[in-house]
Length: 352
Image 1: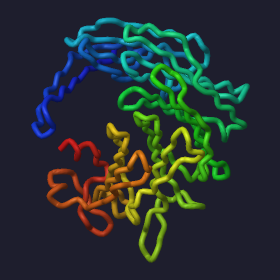
Image 2: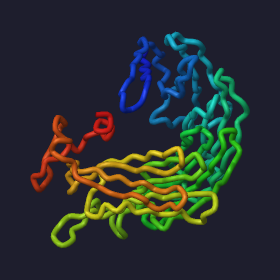
Image 3: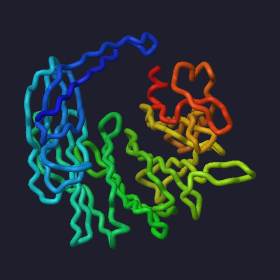
Image 4: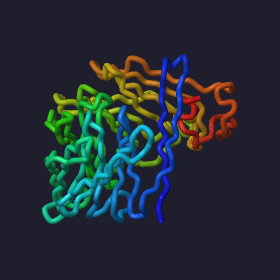
């Protein structure tokens, strides 16, 4: 039995105001049942690169694997099929990144006997040939509650910087959250690294997303619950209000602690949000909010963070009008006000 997949290529031309674009849909292609489609890595003038993984696995966690790099030409014909050998035992595949005319294979290895997690990366050419594996970082831990259980690899928009972020999140209310960071250039040279203990317990902090700027600054979006509770809301003056704050953490090479910027949403509940970095490394954060815990979307918020100062130059929010939500699926919140369906995808509003 084989799985069937297709490649969709969207080509944008002209200015945004012209709204000119073309769509190419490649032919359906098949992969063997014992292989999984990991994702699209890169496209250029010569074709499209995709990654498959071979071997039984569940939720991307397994003891052995064989990544497979495939290239298709612009007509979507298979150009080559390359297995990338991994000789180490007990290796977990974390990610594979396009890093400017090459790829970076990202892995981790947990030595439970030594209570140590080791993170490594391997440069892979566009022809699928792998170089030697390079150790990036090691994190020692004492006991299960400090054992790293999430790993994030990200690359900057210009592909010049790579981020490794690792930490432990076992919802322990007595242990502070520790973040281990390493920032590299795209040749795997280390630029800076540090281990930081945040002033919030594992139970209070929920990490939502990460991004890295072209200059190597790192941003993390976190949801921090009020002290002594992990409930979504609390009652104040007879009204339900959020029992958490959405905080953007900014890490850099010089600071001992990250800068924290609390998004000023007051009594609004965040339902969805996204990051976008500008070419000058300023951060734009935008998303939806609701008026109660039901999650019916009533408005949008926007924050522009200056990369030089770390402060919000612009921060505002506004309700969606009846005209703006017309034609979309809607619901009513507890007060009876109409809003977008709680399952609404942010991209649908942006693309429309």
